[in-house]
Image 1 (cartoon, rainbow, N blue to C red):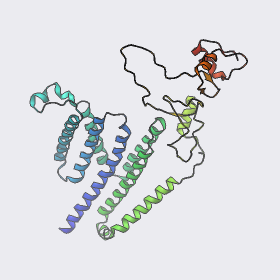
Image 2 (cartoon, rainbow, N blue to C red):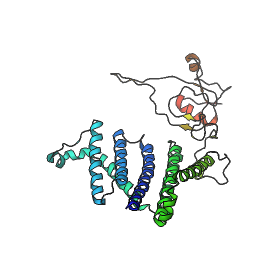
Image 3 (cartoon, helix red, strand yellow):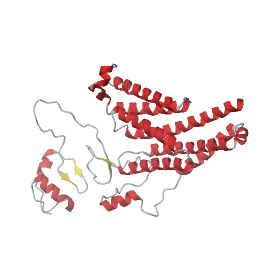
Image 4 (cartoon, rainbow, N blue to C red):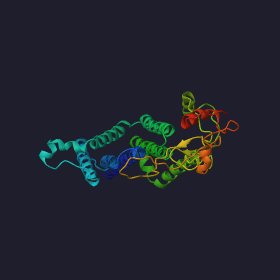
Length: 338
């Protein structure tokens, strides 16, 4: 009887660990979409993910009952989160459920049900080491592609996926060992601190080795650089790795409004912060500032009188590069002769 209880406890423990690792991986996608989705959508997805993980780990009941309970809890949290964020919800009556008020749950309910289905598919399908490696690798590759081809830095999410993936593989390994060699597992379970210490040492060595890898030029061109060159998009000349790492690159420019226009060019990051807001009853044009003197590398701030005088550029001096002349000629409706 005692052995049976210990076996069930061990099975529950490893099942809980598996649900935890998959939940951590799923939360990284929530972190990625947080800036894209509405706040209520993010809250509903987190609730669906957490409800599914907790019930799968802690409720050893028949699957049909567990699925019914999960669906009811997810539906409850959809109602609860919509009410929390001030969204309309169907009235809790037969008329409200069968009427058009049911459309108030759309599309939030689809996000929750999709999260529920994907989570159950992963924990049910990825039972072998090969399938686990496939799921982990697919997530890492997906985040790496999104990190390269979007303006969102996802190195933190990739690190969490790698850590959770290693934990998932270790948990699965010990669970298989427990089932195949029950006597050996009983002896091994008497030294839990040694096992945990060995796992932490191995994980630490892998993480430290990854962090301290030297920065060297690649032997082969990476796919992102090859794609940029094939598309004719120039690479940033200031994209070298400095003390700030690959993410925090202070030499990159911002694409929004800025007061430093003396040195143009190079890469940039998107900046959507508002600059000015105007409330008026009449339509009008608003001007923040005027730049008229181009030094060859950027725009210079000069007094208005000098700026107006430089609108007529003499033939003796022209600081404008050849590639910028057509733009300035169209802007000023003048022909630049230099």
